[in-house]
Length: 300
Image (cartoon, rainbow, N blue to C red; front, side, top):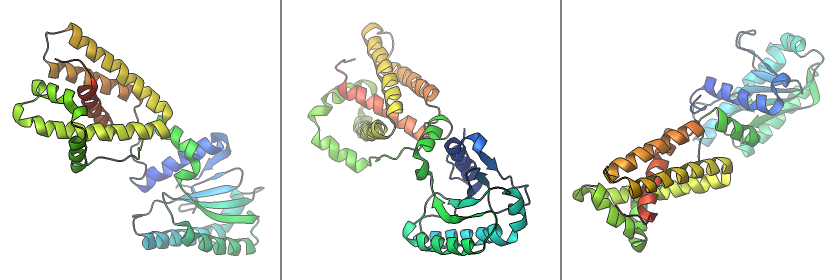
């Protein structure tokens, strides 16, 4: 399993090619390995006439620098596509016409690139190359153009990147002050599992994780409903075991019981959803602990 596909150019290329294989189908895609004539200017193409060049800029935070880098990349690779490698492309695309040349990149600013791509596309069409379609266009695409394929890949093969609001310590403190009655159960339980001098610190920590955990669940409910259902089922199953152990097994300390059940929950989730980030899994772990301490009516 790969981690963040935006870590390096080769990871980005492999990731986007996986997206395209899902979109077009493996039998409708042709890879162009680096060994094919050296720097060929494209990395793959579809038999429907779309060629792709994958590009991961060194930085994407500065709008002007990003746009300049992308324009330079398009200029250089279109030069290869229309001048430097004409004979090779004429042979490679014999009987085909390419209607789209696509730069696959993580992010771009459409308003700055649209005119540039349109102008470049017109110049390419005027060259009258045998493998260029009369409706040829240069485009930029990101993973957001293939949402279905990306969701499937993240679910099955790549690290699941969840975009939800995290909770800072001061936000947790404000929430505690506004929800004192809601936190009565945790106030009763914490002294039995935490040293007295650490109760306030642990309470703040758990509430912070609890709120972040709720945000994560809300995000999953909307964007990844199948994963939300799976995680909820695993949590509810483990919570029932936890409550049953406190009713039937008095031989172990509460902290040890909670730790054992939460470790089992982590193992269960990792087995069912191996692409979940470790940080998100840790948030779920502490969120479940906090949720149980806050809501469960059982005392120990």
